[in-house]
Length: 144
Image (tube, rainbow, N blue to C red; front, side):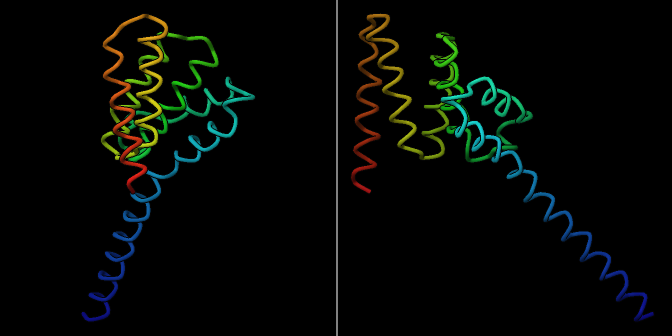
């Protein structure tokens, strides 16, 4: 009876440990694609795009805490590949997730890009709101 009980406890421990290791691994396994894309984005944008496209949905689960980085890279990549509408779209998403993740450096960068896209390119004065946001984010960084 005791031996059988110990065997059951051992099996339960192994089961829960394996679930724990799997759960930790699944959220971090795709972060290497972000790093690889970042390293290749300037010289090999198509390869960088393949790395980013290799990350499966839902992104919120698979690269939790790195969505701002992901969308920043997508915006830079779209700029390299002359996809103007995507640049704007990915900077909006990058700003959203950078604020949520408290990544003020990327939030400031996305705000500057949005300001540039709206004010310099389209002559839209509402872009000044993004310039103010960028100032706010960079002030937060300097105070830290």
